Structures are given as structure tokens and as C-alpha cells.
Image (cartoon, rainbow, N blue to C red):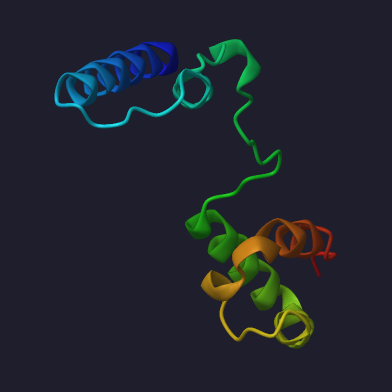
Length: 107
């Protein structure tokens, strides 16, 4: 899919270059066009994965469970450590908070 889109982009750039040459406009050097349209092997593109990604709903549920088990003060303090008051404001710290909250002992 990505390779197909890159090929389409390359073709569009080549057509644009030809049209500019036909109108007498100074085309970009071929090296720049080639650099901009080099194909990328889709196998080389590695998507970023979050190994412990958790849905916001699931994180909320587990946090409520732990709060009801007597850890509400510890949870508030941990959220304060991250500088937030609500779970959905954790941003990039979500995974770290999740690991911490599941490690809390259930009473």
C-alpha cells in the first residue's frame, strides 16, 4: 500500500516536472526529484508499537477497582507525581501508570 502511494507520488512529480519544462520554467535538478521520490521498501517501515497498550476504559476500570480496595490515596499521590489529576491526562505516562497500578496489592 505504501509502495503504491509512493509510486503514484513519483509519477505525479515526474508529470509536474515535464509540465514545468514545457512551459519554460526552470526544473529542479533531477537529483532532488529522485531524492524526494525514492521508493521505500514497506518491509523497512516498522510501525511503532506499544507493548503494554491499554484502553482508557480498561485503565479506568482497573484504577477504580484498586481505589475501592483501599489504594485511593496512593493513586492520587501517583497521579500528582505525574502532574495530573485525572487518568485521561496521563498522556505518554499511561503505560508507566498502568504497570504501577496493576502492581498494587489487592486488599
